[in-house]
Length: 135
Image (cartoon, rainbow, N blue to C red; front, side, top):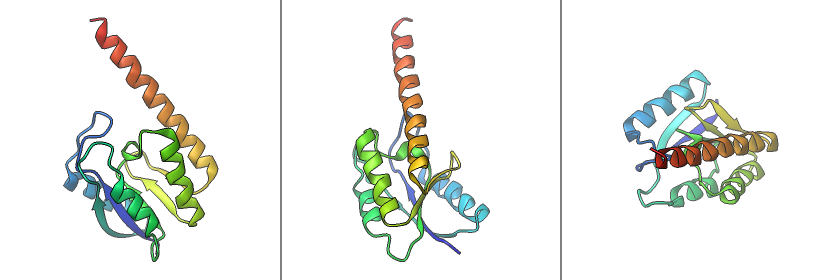
């Protein structure tokens, strides 16, 4: 059984705010449905743009098969930082899953798919801001 560490947020992300206990329920349920051994989640610091805990988790994956994050949109907003983080996970021959979106990263094709999803989210976010200005 794969050992997976949960990862959640203590701050809003991409306009969303989900309580930590709800994030943990979703992560735990995802692990159960996929036959993973869920290890308690680590929680990111609440400071804006902080990914200290995530980076620490990626650096210390020994004894784990990977990470289950609540959402792909909790990953770094910056494309290069996000891709670098994902590649580091792959170099360690580990995986990262995103419970809400039912996505995973286990190869470079997955990284490209996530990049497209992020691009769409960013474009729609900008579109909404422009639309809001016209009101």
